[in-house]
Image (cartoon, rainbow, N blue to C red):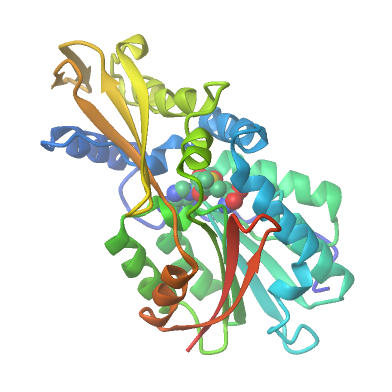
Amino acid sequence: MSGTHSVLAHVQEAENAPVNTTFLNDVLRGLSQPQKSLSSKYFYDEAGDHLFQRIMRCDDYYLTRCEMEVFREKANELVSELNIDGAEFDLVELGAGDGIKTRHLLRYLSEANADFRYLPVDISGHILDVLCAGIQQNISDVDIHSFEGDYFAALGEIDRFSQRRKVVLFLGSNIGNMPVEDCHTFCLRLGEHMHPGDLLITGFDLKKDPRTILRAYDDSDGLTREFNLNLLRRINGELGADFRLENFEHFQTYNPVSGACQSYLISQKNQTVSIAGRSISFEKHEPVFMEVSRKFSLTEVDDLAVTTGFSPVKHCLDSKGWFVNAVWMKN
Ligand SMILES: C[S@@+](CC[C@H](N)C(=O)[O-])C[C@H]1O[C@@H](n2cnc3c(N)ncnc32)[C@H](O)[C@@H]1O
């Protein structure tokens, strides 16, 4: 163990623009396109973090339970390619959220006396505070340095901070929240921050009964609906907009061929919304694309590794075979 105390070094996003300007520009750009859209990375303000934690606990959202089972039952398998008695390493987690699954791996590494530091990255400073407090309370001897910011801004900071070998975690099927081309580019860019032999452990939600998938994103408690509408509430609060939430309704689709599960907010009437002095018109029934959550086959997972400079090492699946944590090694 590299230390008995935790250092919380929240490193702000390296991009120069203040977050609100970037947020405003992204929102205006997305809502000015013929197919209106909003970026799902803005879901996670403090209210969004709380809603997502409730989604993870709800019956219909199977993803967290499946991946939790893998981390609880198979932590040793996930890192068996890594010589944990060898040189020190950094466990980097991208989009770490509250880290409740990762705790199982941290406990396993800690009990095996591995010489590592835990470097969680998240765009939400609030959820990093929740994560760090939870880990300090449960596994107090883990050395944590948290990085607040966008994935690649934070990875740049991490490269300046440390040259140790890396094990990178990208859990919760975050990788599915990118269109196919972006997903490919993401893996290539991520590889530029890794050395040959470093490991990448990614959570992929697998194709399954389409009804099971749709229910996870259109749950009976209405949490995913609230989660989507909360982004409009955030835009009102942070960008001085006047969205009326009752004028939009959540709608979810799943295409079993492409594996794309997509969420939309549908305008319920002809309306005009003001955002920082700009007027944006919505027609009745016009959709605003919010997020894709892509589902994969195991072959698609392996193909993605091979075409982006990694070697597929193993698949760690939950007992239902609904979710896989794929272990890849950097070539
Ligand atoms: C779907 S949650 C998953 C959280 C966690 N990985 C898990 O499996 O429980 C996505 C997390 O990624 C973070 N996130 C989303 N986009 C991000 C980005 N571009 N850069 C850094 N973090 C991001 C969010 O703040 C959120 O905590």
